[in-house]
Length: 346
Figure 1 (cartoon, rainbow, N blue to C red):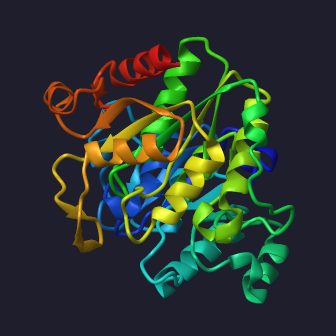
Figure 2 (tube, rainbow, N blue to C red):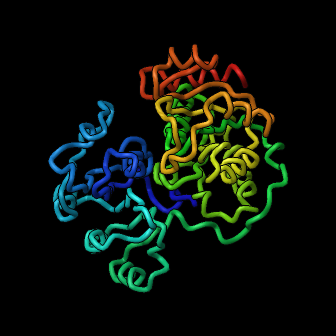
């Protein structure tokens, strides 16, 4: 999906993050507020954090002090210029919470297009589609998989004249999308010809050059979809950063991780790790395999070299522990250090 083709960036936006802003469950809302080059957040709706500002909730001094408010009505009063609503939370179970229905309707009646990362597709529902037509707004279901031109990978990405860098995690929700974006931004600020490919809903909403929610693509076609996106972005840039998903050692999600690895067929990989974790998020019976094992997996299952480690921990301690160039992307100079390590390998 190419959201850039549907909007004129930057789009004044209200972000719905009820009950989750600043938490891992609100990572889409967090990412849009922190990083989006497409959606310019003007207000966040989360009654549990109302009265504060986005920089306070996220603990980031580089984030603008966007108001966090109690209701959609208040958001529209504070930011009447908004043109889009981003639903920044995908609740467990996939259903649309009943408490959100009126908020979404209110935004649509105010003229907002709706960009949804929900597992249910609003555009396929007659009632929502009818309301969108009545209000003259559009519904974008970013999790909806491509329906045409699906194919298996054939290796044509090898013929594209660009370098490809993939992030691979030791678990889910360790910062692969954030690391990918920060590497891309550091490359652009360094004057490099760079683009990036998203494989999750947050990356699409942040404004990747190309993207698809890869876990909704049929398994046989995962690598082919990624290969096509990398080839497209690589045809326009010298350097392509690809967002990874899951972990190669993760029993629940490894098939998606491997499909991205083989579809992108990267020249370099940046591993992403939270050193405080001992078991996998939402799967406590599964232990974390660790950086060394994931490095071995990457290098045995592809031709890529692991160039660096992106960590949530102390970069000096983790560098000594793992013998890799290491940085925390939230530290000053962290993204630039990771980019330097990648460029050295390339």
